[in-house]
Image (cartoon, rainbow, N blue to C red):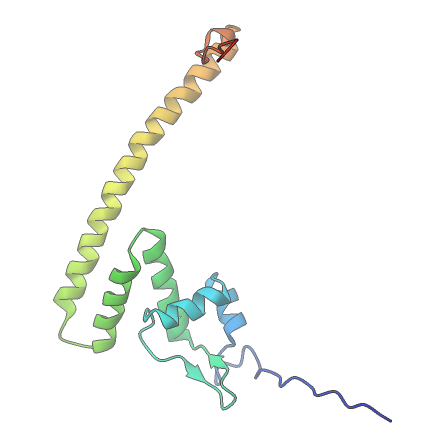
Length: 155
């Protein structure tokens, strides 16, 4: 008896701009995982409803990809999900709330600048330590560098 195995239903062409991109192709193009794309959608971070095929497959368009890149940049600079969600809500609502959007972006910019200043201060300490090690190694007295004292016979 010949056994007929069911064939998986293929996803539509992955890069047909008219029908949109598959979630895998959207993930590849935006540099985020498929899981992240689904999370962004569930968390209310996307500004438009992602299209679906008749079979329920997500189909991403350029506007979706552009927005996902914005979200990833905001996250990468430390913007909380709650703030990104609020920004997405404002964008989705359309005209009339541009002042609130601006205020949100200005506040985030101030946070990023403060974090950059902190990182620059930390980098100064790292650079100093590098200079000390290079100098001591070049002088041949690296054994003079601080090291914790090991105690013997600890109780």
